Length: 197
Image (cartoon, rainbow, N blue to C red; front, side, top):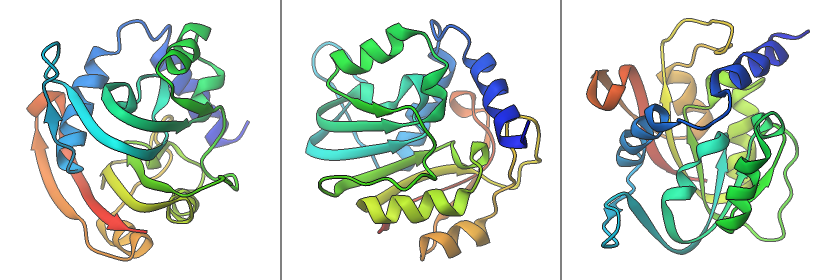
């Protein structure tokens, strides 16, 4: 079994039945802020992002994509973990009008039209080829919004150590780097930014 396949098995065990994803969703609110998304209150919840009918591709969004907190969005999720999650997760995406592919983002992804934005957050350490993911993101959309952990050691679920230098090179620009010390459950050194594809 390859390192990537072992990582997928580990990741599916980490998500389990996907019933309580609050911890991950709390972190996503920090990721969204750093990626330049602005929260709006719809008189029911303050945790909404109005995407103004933009087409968004979320590569690696997993069973609790940020797209589920978006309004006025045409969203699509690509993630191999979706083949391991309970069926109700897929039904939730369908009910929300979010399309999905149960496969890796390294695959040659072909779309009828380009996406306005591609989102990558806390995903590249889990992939087989992080550079290929960014190549596909650039080919699929006009803008890339990204949040990734950098300089973290490799383990069974995180099979790459990402660096600021590599991400800047792959993205063709310069991201911001910040050390987080527990805010919204986030610890470590992160890289984020908005990049033209």
